[in-house]
Length: 290
Ligand code: SIN
Image (cartoon, rainbow, N blue to C red; front, side, top):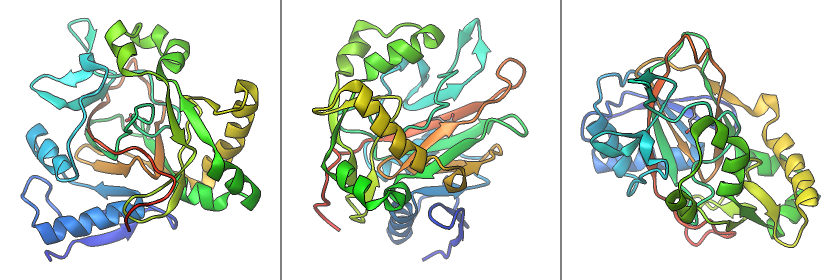
């Protein structure tokens, strides 16, 4: 073991790992330890990775599993379809990355049949004291729910509807979805509580942007119940707010955390981030291995 060090980010989740260079091959034993820490902590921070290339980011991310190509193909990094660019920068009159969104808590690709396992997010440029990313643990949120609500969510299935949500929230900012993008994102049902496939721990798996309703419940009743869970998940003292420095990499477990981008001056400052998104499996109520 090469002896990397750990520093907790929050009492309930998140770790900074130091002593790892993500541009270098990582021995299997060390990688297994990184993977275990990732599943246990939900978020890993690696600072000082400014020297790594897009190919290094792809190689490191692929150790966790195959990577997604995002449905918004116009924001993929030329030559690296596994890298989704998140940025407010405009070049040649065109946005080079996904912009103006993600300001509400979500877990990446939760609206797909097989939502993402995790995301690796690398900061290339950022404003000095804004444009942070905030995280919450949905495992800690489940634990914090009153027992009665835990029992209710344990039994519920949620209907995710990406196109419905995009039309209401994003179409004006990013332009309409194409027919092909619509066809790739039909409504999908997921359990409201999922077990982590590697640790067995239960997490709430919900979204107040993409969940339209719970199966067998009206939209109004569903939205009221969803709001109760989200209030617990987003309580301010449960948030880890990451202040970016160029060269930071944060990877988050989409099976047990949610995240959101914090506002910044999008007209006068630049923020450029590269995301690789690891493919996941269908969320399950009970863990099959741990
Ligand atoms: C994301 O939602 O993947 C990006 C969050 C951010 O821009 O901070």
